Length: 375
Image 1 (spheres, rainbow, N blue to C red):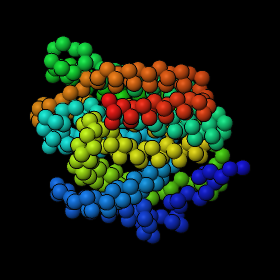
Image 2: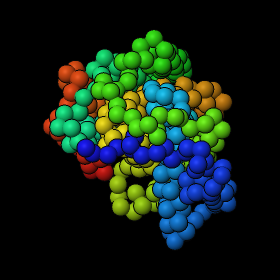
Image 3: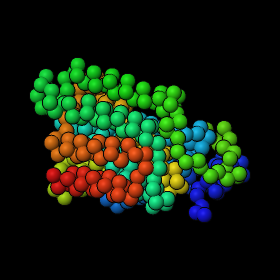
Image 4: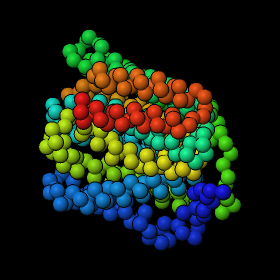
């Protein structure tokens, strides 16, 4: 029988607590934050960017590890929610920082980054989870009720915040008026808050794996409260390092995009990919271990949090900062979004998926990336 991560002793049992022995997943978040403090608001050469990128990737791996420790303690679906919200809150800070410092050229940055996050999670991570799950057990099985509710919420949020601005007439161009932006912000918070309440309280079973998991005796005991708090703190440090270092290397990303003659939307795609790396790796590991439902929770929960927390934050920031803001998608992006929703519904309804469904979603993700660099 294939071994899973549940067959191995938990990485943070009493014998190997992170505060008893320094390990890479403890050291890397600390080094990442210290490095971030040293390079913040400084122009770096290409040679200096290389170790920063390596450290960023190490912080991603550390974030995944500590997210799994916290998830093991609090249980699902709270574990997936912790990682999604933590990453998104810091992502919002990154978007606002880049918008304030970027001026008019950063007007579409929030739209590009949020749309990229939706396509990465709903096609890239979603498709990869189905593909890996189907490869492992021939058919990836998940709970259609919970996954369908999550997909419906993502579709509603994306339409209200990214599609409607293209068709409203109160303001010229694909933008909301102040009143419309306030409504979109409140609606986003209500939808996201309602989903979290349903996911964690009233219908929690709809978001748990359909098939019972095989749990080894050595792994039945969750990490201690002290170890969990330590991992939570290190998770936050790792995520701060990931997003902060991504912001540090963003000038190099922008220069590379300009030098290659690519559209500015490619910057948002690269930033979203960097920020979503922890969720992608966590979802991949969950699918590899037969927990497809947890992978889908991570994917759709991240898409939901990216919209439901970013738009309200931008709405509040616009009161004081008045940043230029374009939210409406173009025709190509709306077609991709509509196709993603339709294909997602057809994938979710049966509650089981084969390699084909995973390949379809990954093809849509590839189309998104291709059209982002060659519109």
